[in-house]
Image 1 (cartoon, protein in one colour):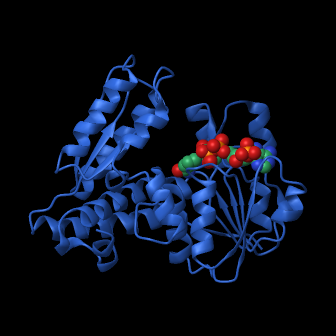
Image 2 (cartoon, rainbow, N blue to C red):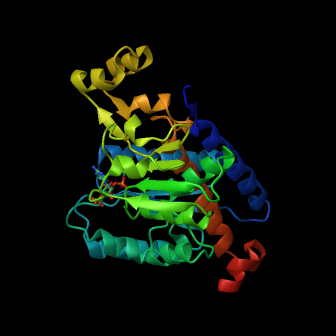
Length: 316
Ligand code: NAP
């Protein structure tokens, strides 16, 4: 039986509607959550991401600002910019779009963002809050996956979860969130022995490796929930035929755009998984929805006791 497809677009819309509603309520009290997006230089992919983030803010009633320092900016100049944004009260979230140009010390710049404005959840302080289960800002992609699992009623308590990939922005926080939700979690990476065997034990398998169609049916226990985080482009006919031969819809998109997106999970997994996120239309849309949710959360956590949850007020 074919896997149920977990519709990321629908769930992302649900989240965005909730954010818009709450932002509307807050605006009646004079609070408008604000996001500053810093885009250095002119990387075409980054420009598209930032544009879409700013437009989503506008659509949901959040304040947003796009700041575009030149390509040749130095680390010191970007640090000064971040410090200015840290000091501005109407800015609740600061997003520094990656990658930064090679002359910039990215780690230093990211570390300069105040933890309470770190809507990407990358700051070590937020990493610490996550691992000690304190309120803080959680990286958007894994936070979105948790929302998807929760809203799709996928049981987590006691489930065997396997996360393939251990990056700071996806794999590690994903594993931590699943652990916090009482799953039994295994983290895999490029040195893992018998990867298919380890993955085959999973009730929930998260593939976040950036390897086209790597996870085949041999990796997947029948009925498992498979979350495909990978975003890879197929641009050649040979590769297209390997994965999508005879798929009319894909064929049309490929002809029109000259490429099609594929995840880390092979399409054949749909025949064995119980539930599966499609690519595109799965995890991707959730990432931006959670950025909006994080901006709202940052505004509530940071501004005034009347917006604070009791736990956050305790933390001061
Ligand atoms: P990353 O920093 O490159 O990390 C990849 C991880 O996968 C590493 O831990 C690596 O292991 C592991 N890995 C690579 N090849 C492997 C193999 N053959 N077997 C086992 N493990 C392997 O990537 P990332 O930033 O986490 O992103 C992962 C994917 O998710 C990419 O395709 C990216 O485009 C996509 N992504 C999508 C979204 C979204 O919104 N949908 C958001 C973020 C990322 P080692 O640590 O041993 O090298």
